[in-house]
Length: 173
Image (tube, rainbow, N blue to C red; front, side, top):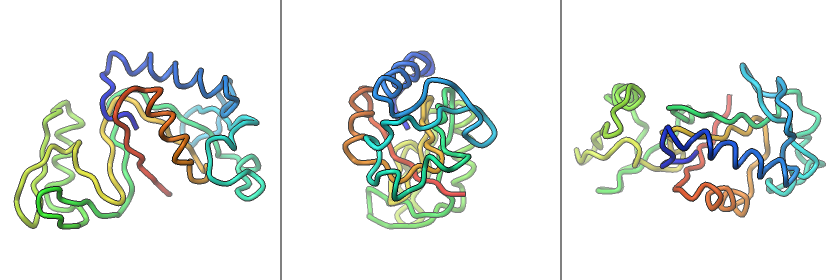
């Protein structure tokens, strides 16, 4: 997920990354029903350049739901469960009281929405919270449905292509 793409530049960046992934054969150009509830791009023959394990081990190409969904527009990317870490005091906690209200505030247009650490009380902009299972808030994201873990090299290449800070949000249904 791109932490810094503006609403205006997100469509252009999405198209550039999509075209780059197609050129590298990591995804197919055509949109299909390969993601849940929307259209996505199926893995291409070169998808192994993006993952830690080759397809023989993961079975990615045999799955019905296995595409890349590109999200353009104000979106919250999240993992169910998982802890956040306070940069001020180091406390680790599962976000509870006040977190969903702060997320709603951000989603409704307040880029400066904050959440206070339940341990030390220090407020932090919602978009700056991190942890083992971070949340992502932004205008551009890439959902890799059922893909095995992406390689660190590939994640860095995407970040360089975007030219912005990124966050990897892992999710599982």
